[in-house]
Figure 1 (cartoon, rainbow, N blue to C red):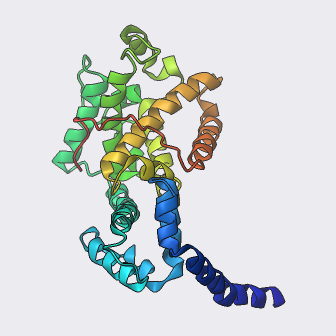
Figure 2 (figure 1 turned 180 degrees about the horizontal axis):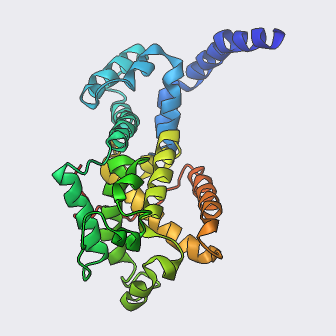
Length: 310
């Protein structure tokens, strides 16, 4: 009880007194000190995000539509008694940070919407996308029937792939198609350790030791959890100059698929029964990387024109 009283006193009284003294000494409020002393990117944006607890106005600022951010910044400047003519750069810096914060929240909502949309075999667009995946993976092997054991050849667990999309919904299907279009180009590019012939030998189940489709859905789940937990803030705030979008999420998924593939080969597991162990170890490595405020998982990843417009 005594500790709680002390904490309350610190938060309500001492902390405010300290802020007042620092502002008088520096001539700057906390927002100004963050924007002027912290370089752009995750370090700055995450500090600005933590400032939401400082005032109700800042709490409101991350709950507005992106189009209303400019007015929100004007309100914040007025609340903090900051002259925009004397501090023009502050408004620009705040706008970039708030666009990233609001954009990240909106991205979670968009990804969640896709994840919650179930695969519908009666929907022509869903079926077209699924058949496109088959053609990408098995261009020289026509699919004999929509319900077929052939689906197991590209890593699905049964004769109807829709059952494997139950957890990740359409998000899993979109990511599989996008990943294949990107990875198929990457693995036999000059930057890759594989030649095209080697990749053709390694790309299916027995050669690499895991199933492409079901692993892609698993990595979709990993990317989704990194996003929802906030772990991907570091990455997105460093690679997206404004609001992160679904394209950024797709890029990140493709990167994770590529890195998991390399990690699997490095781990050299005995069989697929070790998948969960390898996945968990890979997850921990990515989380550790994202703890670095300067981390960008794929800083040179250019948006592919083939990424699906969702």
